Image: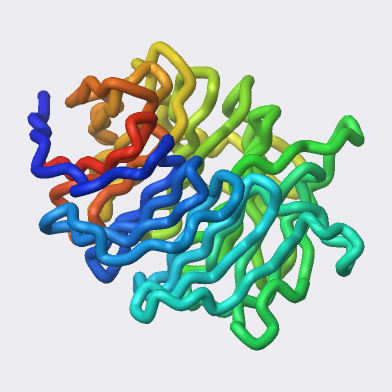
Length: 317
């Protein structure tokens, strides 16, 4: 079986540098972040810019939105985290986590906004997840921490952190290839996966919060069933599919709302669409540069990509 994806339209004006993250929101708009330090909000029907943030001095490397699509959380390469109101255009809160004298918090690398936008999670060099307040009046205040137990006693650099859509779990991937899943209410590590031999750069949850897709420098994507509890610190056997076909690092991943397909972007300059029932690649889109952002439309039927050329592109099946 194969699927044909055609280019619907591109952004009217792109970022001045690589797009390092894209998110198609529940409000049917697209948010993007770039190595040029800017964040943009886009009309999905036309590709026209709705609004953008003034450029940060350094690159923006992490992006997350809430369940309503009304707020976006972004993080810069040195650890400045901001909360952006997508409706008004205002920055509601800002946390400079690189200032280690303040509360002893390490610089954030990856951040994730909770579905209800009340908290956000961050991770970085130590591999610890810190949960912060996302209330504009107390934005950035640390409220809890979650830390995996390392068998070798070594720190694991936290590369990516993500709340599950139902808000009950937090998943974190590391530079060394591990994946940890925490139960937030119980503050327990409930899953530990050793599915990859190299850095895991992106994680994507299924809409029902039962499956977790990982994208790695080992050129593979792996789909995990998080309902298979592995116990604290012990690698689980919850890997249910390995998707092979990229010829270089897999940089981004997204699962469709109906759970039938996955999309991935790679440094091999392709976007691949995967049929999860057959575990096969059913469509390959050749691009001109590395693809750092892919995101399915929550309502289904289309996806948006962003990468090295600085533009956003909308594709329809």
